[in-house]
Image (cartoon, rainbow, N blue to C red):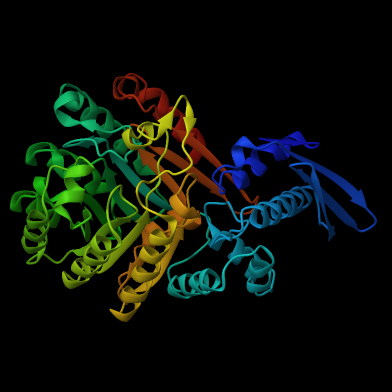
Length: 467
């Protein structure tokens, strides 16, 4: 637990504490004092005091707040790193988007590497960020009026044990489907005047292919008039057990350019353990089914799934590569509130030290290192990355792409460089005010019946936000 002389810093400092299992149970005291042309952070941990003076010069209140936060977190990280004899791959960085910080430095005419080194980011991860930025050239763009459209279909065949989304097995929510699709079409019709320079469309979930052909066509047909410029169009088809040639035909008919086959693992044992209702063989069948179509294919894997060995994960990466999808995303297990797997790791209301068991952090680091090595050798380049709280081993998610196949939507969303107009339950719209350096968000209700009841109000709020 952290107590600070600056109360507004306490949540930020707790983000650092959570990186070190066991530290949450300790009493940590932080004070911040101004000195001549400097600030000094003092950390008291187990009765031992450590002082960290930093030269300080800020241009404006926002910059001052950002720097104070940065140096306070760095001071605490150094104390905990020494106390637990442990360094972390992203050092004291706790933000979701390391590339954002790198871009800010580059826009100021500075190389970002010295700052990353100061914040204890590993050289390997600094190199990773540099490669991501290089891969985004020609796609990354900060321009007023750019917008991406997200369409939420929060229905799945079953709920995975690691999932914290509001999705539920469709057999329990099918009763809401007709009204949900009507509400979705109302939102899509109302969105037409708000889509200025539409860069991409993404239909996600959930598992969109869990809808039958008739219902899926309703969604695709409602989207069709909005995609006037032939931009990138992704349907996160999802799990292989709901793939059919008829659904792929519909995607081709309505101009979809990219689909996602969400493998997560190629181990039957792991798939069963996490609550997936499909097999490794069905993954191969889905890839074979998609082969005749002109779609770019994305494939997702997760490092750190409970009980999965290093060898099993390595085989999953190799099998994914052998199927030759244009994109492979390697996620690190992240357990949030609402995930069944996380609830199984709670004891007397207190989170256990390890989020993943029996996986050791050393094995997880080897998984990440292996995926980076073999994907690069197979001709893939990292083109986006992001991090989340409660991510195992304080690692990251990385999207890898073959040349010329990077996803516009993924880059725009991860870098928050364009507006995102999102429709459907639990969809979060974002308006990016580039000239003001700020973002406004508007979230839709997570509960499906509540979303349906409030759709007209949501339409009015989105008109206000995006007009």
